[in-house]
Length: 260
Image 1 (cartoon, rainbow, N blue to C red):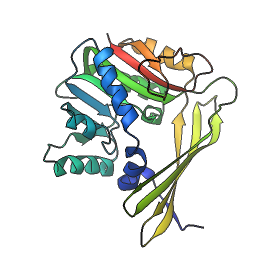
Image 2 (image 1 turned 45 degrees about the vertical axis):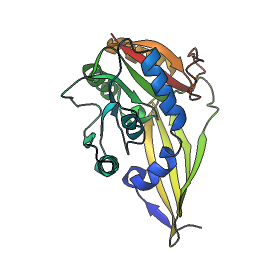
Image 3 (image 1 turned 90 degrees about the vertical axis):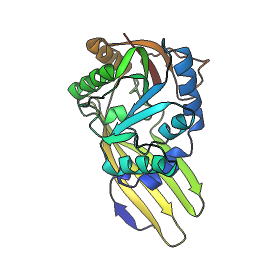
Image 4 (image 1 turned 30 degrees about the vertical axis):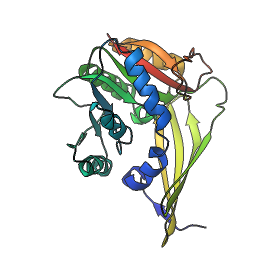
């Protein structure tokens, strides 16, 4: 049994980035295609709310995009800015709440791909976020938003595992649904990182609450905000040639929202 460390996984950006930063290629290619095919303006400036460690921002910056982001966690922001500094690039990220922020210059496109949207705890916070994003993205630009919907009946996916290694560091991650309260629209999720270094092995244990969305609830939210139209929808295969139709049984969705 590994020794237990209680803490927020987001407070360990080195381990978080190893797990989620190692599998970036499909998302990166999808974003590049979406910028080219679905934005109705040339995409040069790109923004990521809840950018975390900047795993995709740094790839897009290397491709020539002007990038920026924000995140509520100062440790993640520091990690993101440090990786840019090592390349001699200016820091792209600031500490800010994704439901109440402003940008100095607007962007051609934005993205948020791995369920961070569901950390917003209420309908009002979700509306505020989408309005902040509408203020941040120029007309005819796009916001690529990925999240797990709550389907009718029993969800088919209730746990996920990832593993990654870099040099002498290895991390095994697990995420699982503890409970779902459809009335309160809360999914309680357990998360662990099993960390292996040459001198230490331990398990980081965390738990978080995600807000739940059915397809109908998500579409109603977008209608209320009014600033976005759904340009296309995809699943987590990130195949730009294979859009999907979202219905009551859909779970994994990438919404490509176009700014009106």
